[in-house]
Image (tube, rainbow, N blue to C red; front, side, top):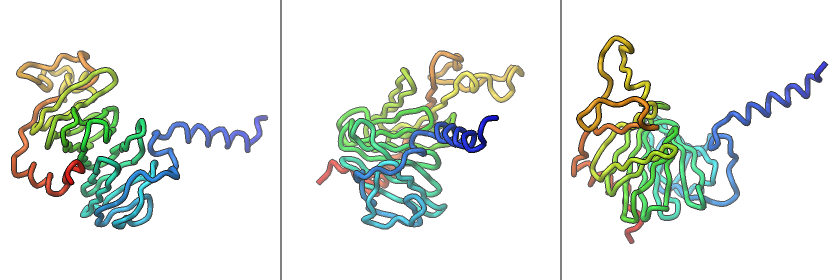
Length: 230
């Protein structure tokens, strides 16, 4: 008979292997950034305070009326209320995996920061000061807004550009969405660029939902000023 202790150890190892990369990682010993603003927020299970050092693998989260902002190299990351993200580094640059709520990031160059959300990778398009905002709706749908500068969204080998001032729904399972809520009932699914979605043509689909107002862009810029500025 297979020893009970060995069986328990094997099951525990399989459980650890199944956890998401960002969630499973333990904090590193190298500082990744610093909390520069916090209200009703936590780093792990501890309350976040201004000046708290952030390490790779840390989990940031906020309450329903909270927020937290960190500075990491040439980037800043702001989590709005009821949000959560795991911070890490990707290729030596700060990154975060958004798992709930809304994250807004500000960068001074194209390689300064990467945001992951479900299967999508969101980065600045260029080295101009960029502010992007991503809302995690569920594992198959995001809302991505380019507040300042262009935003590049990548899923596997497919790449889409979201121009400055534009807000898009990002559907990560376009085949399912194309069938519509009625399935075989004959109702048409979502459309893009004036025509119906063709199922299976892409790993994901972006659908324009509006243009961001100048006042909103200014407000975001003031709350999360680009670190490229002095």
